[in-house]
Amino acid sequence: MRTVDKLEVYCDGRHVGTMAAYQHYRTVFQYTESWIREGFSISPLSLPLVAGVKATKADPFDGLFGIFADSLPDGWGRLLVDRMLRREGENPEEIDPLTRLSIVGQSGMGALEYKPVHSWKQGTETADLDYLAAECQKILRSEESNDLDTLFALGGSSGGARPKVMLKIDDEEWIVKFPASGDPEDIGMMEYDYNLCAQECGIEIPKVRLFASKNGAGYFGSKRFDRICSETGEEKIHMASASALLEISHRIPALDYTSLMALTWHVTRKETDVLKMFRLMCFNIFAHNRDDHSNNFSFLCKKGDWKLAPAYDLTWSNSLGGEHATSIAGEGRNPGIADILRVGKRAGIKETNVRLIAEEVQEKVNNRLGKYINRNKK
Image (cartoon, rainbow, N blue to C red):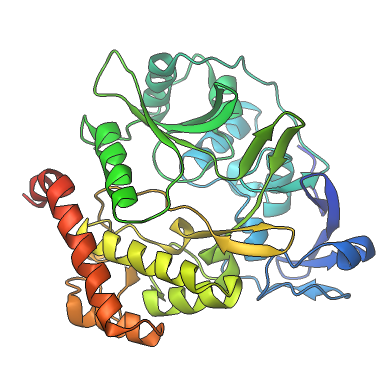
């Protein structure tokens, strides 16, 4: 497999700039003149919209800027890529990040695309979810899949630990998740209920569905919010995680909601988005969603206008040591109203509003999700 040392970066087909390998396992990036005139900063803190070459540090993204590391598959998607590499006689440990981005090509989450593209044989798309779930289980058991090409084509650019596929259903782009090892049998139903509860709490979520299965309660699916389908075709929406914007690894629990609120204001300049983030924090606390790491918060940008993305990956979960991956005013194990008040105060939210939001979210969570929370605590 040919190693790539330079990539051209595009945003939904428009040339953004050039990225190249640099000394000591680093990379450099430079915007094109046309993008500087007509585009926007793809990562406001790290890559302001100015001329000149910008170099990265070696850590924490193996020499990439965070916004480009966002494009790399993680978890399930990385597992599929590595399986494909081994099948082709390659050692995954020897494949550098730029070459991995060439494998992503135009299939990544968000709107960023990379050329040249390294292409593999494409599988046949199928909407048989039970079949796809069974093939995913083979991969998780370290067995040979009968249809690795199809699994890669449908899920090779994804992140997260749980197996998933990206399908067009009823002319809309969907992400459908399958159970991972150790998941409860009703994981699809649980995530569906969590999302509906979040919506009741005033949190923006994508359109969600529970897809039927012959083998259980169903598969959770969410409509992709980084894609807009219309009569004129599909538009890709630029997306950046908090991890990318802050240049911090989601694998290290170093983020606090106080910083997340500040980031939300700095990027969007919208008080409504700060309040949305605050509601999401309250939901994660009361619903015991503790895998709330920096990759699980994202922002969307259309024509330079940034906004908080809909909430995703909402379900009962633990993180390292059973604590929140993102702490609440420094507290990760047992956050309470005092910690919530501290975050709200630092974000400039009135105490009366903080208490009202927290009480409202707690009541709705207890009413709808209590059965899951109590079961998982046992």
